[in-house]
Image (cartoon, protein in one colour):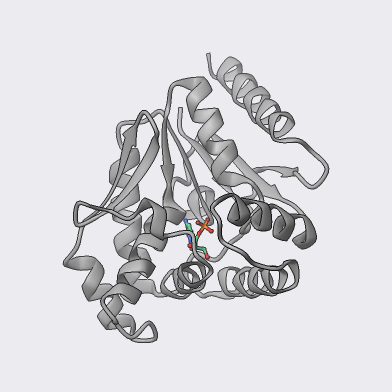
Length: 223
Ligand code: DC
């Protein structure tokens, strides 16, 4: 079975996807981390972020890998471990810009489909159910209010020792939502056959339980 989990920034996709993958013994693929890796490299190598051809060329000449370890998933850019460098507000903004480029998305699509080819993956992102894995067995679309998503992001950043404030996080998330939803290629959109879960008033384990129930129902219906 392949499981696609999409939704806007801060809706809880990564945590939920990771936990569902763990429970099922599936491979978790965080596609946002791949756009973030490229965004980090653009910044690190001083490539102009508004130059689509230059950004796409950088991706073409590089490798991105997600490596599973006992301590979680590592994000490697040209074999360099950049896991701890890709969650800053700067990288978040750049990721949303580079993700709007068709030449970048086309390459990411190929990479992501190759990663999922063996099956039994939980993949999270913005366009997994609509573009990357349109035939996924289970599609989930997670949402939450902007206020709640900003609060979660604030707590997440605080845990990593990065200080921020709710007001600017809300603004950043709203900007990213707008860019991710309005771009021409593979915008953030709920697939028609995706199950919608509003996580605003749900705990993490409630969301995971709901996703597991959907997976179970789908598995039973298929067998
Ligand atoms: O899920 P995230 O915040 O780590 O994603 C970072 C950015 O990458 C986000 O602004 C949207 C983009 N993205 C995308 O366009 N398509 C995906 N499948 C995953 C992420």
